[in-house]
Length: 292
Ligand SMILES: Nc1ncnc2c1ncn2[C@@H]1O[C@H](COP(=O)(O)OP(=O)(O)OP(=O)(O)O)[C@@H](O)[C@H]1O
Image (cartoon, rainbow, N blue to C red):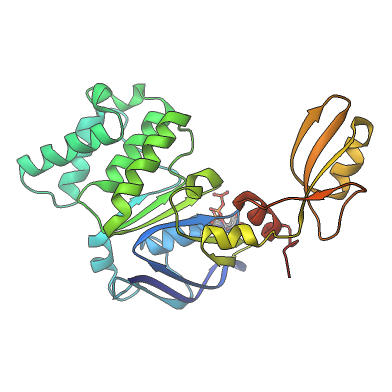
C-alpha cells in the first residue's frame, strides 16, 4: 500500500540547496535510506517529522498533506532524531513514562504495559531504574529507539538508530523492526549497509541532496553488474592501485594484496569480474561508476 509520496521536494539552508527536487514513494514496510555524510538524509527526516519547513514540493503521508495537516501526521509519528537528547536526571523508566504521557497514552495501565514491553524489547529492563546519566552511548540509543515506538505509531522515522550499538544489540534491533514493519511504515536512515541488507525490501540512495536510486536491494546490487573486479597484485603496487581506483576492500595474501575494485573496464591484467553485493551497488552509485 502506497503510504508516503514525496514530489518535487526542495530545501534550502539560505543559499545552500540541501534537497534538490526529491521524488520518493514508500509503501508500508521497512524503507532503508542510504547516503554518505552530508547527503541530506537528516534534513529529509526532519522535514518528514514536521520539525523543519521546506521551500517547495508536496508530501503526503497516509493521505495527509504534511504542510497543511502536520497535526494529523504528528499523531501517527514516532521519531528518533540523529542527535537525541534526554533529561539525564531521570531513570530510563521515568523517561519512557514521561514520553508516553506526552504522546497521549493516558491510562496508567496502558502506560505501564507499553513501557515494560519496550524496555524488554530494547533490552533495558535490567537498567530501567538507573539514571540515564549513567547509561552508555549504546544504552541511550536503545532508549531512543524505545521512545520512538511509544504510542504504537504507524509512521516511524529512525535516523541512524544503530550508531553505537554492539553487534548483538544491532541484531536484536533488526529483529524488532522487522516484526514492527508488518503493518506500518518505518524509515531507517543509515550508513550501515548490513542494517538494510536483510530486512529492507525498499531502499533509496541519496547523494548531494539528490535521490540517485530507489528500488529493491537486489536492484541496488545490480547497479554494479560488470563493474566489480577482484585482482591480486604485488604489495609494492598497493599505493598506485589505491590512487587510481575505487577500492571496496583489500586483503593480504602472502606477498600480494587482493583488491575488490569498482571500475568500468578491467583494472589490471588478470582481474576477474565478480558478482556485485549491495555495498558494491551503493559504492558504484556514489562514485558514478555504474552499469549503463
Ligand atoms: N542548519 C543547517 N544550516 C546550514 N546547512 C545545513 C544545516 N543542516 C544541514 N546542513 C547542510 O545540509 C547538507 C545535508 O545535511 P544532512 O545533515 O541532512 O546530511 P546527512 O545525509 O544526514 O549527513 P550525515 O550522514 O553526516 O548525518 C550538508 O551539507 C549540511 O552541511
